[in-house]
Length: 464
Image 1 (cartoon, one colour):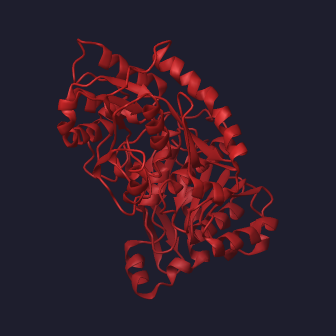
Image 2 (cartoon, helix red, strand yellow):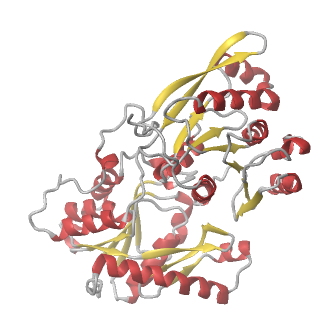
């Protein structure tokens, strides 16, 4: 686990020390790779520049990378992804032509009229903050080769182990601090993994170009400079709360929850985890981090008390009691929306597996409370059709393309949901363990909540 990109860059630099004698040029992939590359360039005494790359997203699921485009026109296409989504080369060329406009815009922002440094005959280290499928890295390698580089090295703090063999086809060497398997998503390996802006990229490049810059100068926003949390899984500003509820037969109880509410939050998303999981689910916490970076507050809570969870480990019955789980979501919703800091904020549900059924059931019971619902690999078929018909919020059903049974079950409920969309992530199985697929889910969710919840509703600031 890396604290942030700065920490990842320092630890990566130690693995690259042997390249110092080759007087390499360090190229940071935009945008997230640039702050990592800054640390590498400092450690090796090597010049730093940004290389602009853009992912080519699949039509209908733009977060699923079918390839990438680098400045100068170098294109990489994942052939298996093309087969998965059914695209031909002409359609890919059209996608690349559209992305070329954004590539040109970013080149102008980062370098103006300056070209990339002379690479002919040089060792070039291409740096990213993490590599899942490696589409953007492949495109960058091909762009660098076209400029005559003698040796091209890929370096990142974390790289999916299953992607290394294919990466080695375009790179002379692949260097990482960690090569995990399974990988899931880059952000899971960082405590703080906020989005990198154009301004932050320019800050890194200006820092490198200034001979008087100090290594400890603050270049980035506040979240990068915060000390590491005592709990490595906790998000910055996370607060643990207890949500009260009434047992139907055993009196009052409480559910443990983790609340993050950014300044000026656009809304609050409640996470309803699936069977056998908890609020500490790394998949949900990764998605929550993406939503927090997009300006949303998040609430991850346990649907069962600690005692119930222990009992359920033996019997396995409560986790499939949709009526019980729905009642817990309703209780949590009523409690959280009554808080002064939350009142007036649009509310969304992010449900997984059986938790998606509970989220939809709660949305049917509380139509005036819920602005949007996202289901990841969910089981909406566990909710009766007449109940689904009561859901007024727009619903996004996200299913892996290889999760065939669940995909058919999700298709079966579309006639009951008035405002629903099914989004299939190509190449993904039920748990979205394949590199890049969980990131696709997270960005689809951020876009859905962003469109459905609308602009921030004025109300008490979290600092009030």
